[in-house]
Length: 256
Image (cartoon, rainbow, N blue to C red):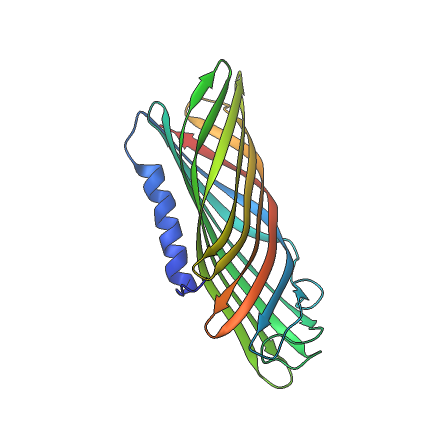
């Protein structure tokens, strides 16, 4: 976990990736735009050489309130192959008090925290039709770009974790249609051990119910749940992150 990019650059990359997938010429394509209400949970620790404790994002940093975010998804179907991309961006901030060490911050310091994360998902799968149901195994790549900063409100000392994680994982998509309705579910999971300085387990699950009221248009509701439980390095510091992001989605789209 040692690649460093600015949050603005990463967000531009993830957005362009999704627009590219959505815009490719093909027998069938769709673009969806919506709103997702996310909640962030979990623990994080940072060790600058003097030891550290796991700090709860909610209890220690005051993060975890429901945050709204735009959601963009594009899909191209070319017979059997199906290419999908989506992107969302989450921002959260809060005030809290750490319990023990966190990098160079004093134990039990009062802190002001900011969390920014762009999350892109790009996948390629092959659709296997089984009557009204289809199953599509394939490969998914999650791109996590997160920047977490905590500053002591008294001493003015700050610590930051700024990371870009590119996580390939096997996944499967299942779809079922009934009249003007369609249900879609995706699940990806991988455990990484000793690749560079990255170790951890990664999960990405998404379900969606779509309704097609008139030709070439759709509305949808859905739910997204992603988890990262890993260890790595940020600069000269070691960190661990057990992050959990989940939320409801609603929106609409067009097909062409």
